[in-house]
Length: 82
Image 1 (cartoon, rainbow, N blue to C red):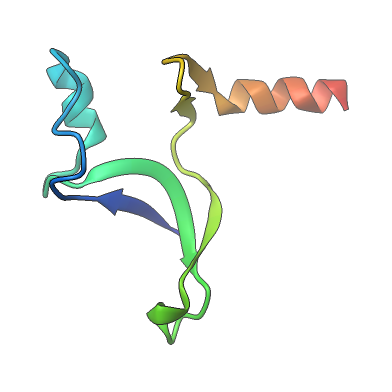
Image 2: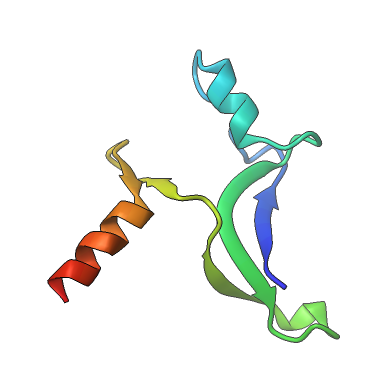
């Protein structure tokens, strides 16, 4: 079963600048940042073997230029092209 990767710590941003609603949506109730990335354990019996990327939980991603991309919309356009 996939789980979402979440981070917490001094190296994680405290929130979005002057955007409390976005900050609240980006963090869970324990203060962990929600990445939107799903992972699986490589070996369910040995967590030390690591994780394997299993797709996106979130529909949208934000790239370096601060542009938000809808993955569902992009995928539908790619399917039309293929």
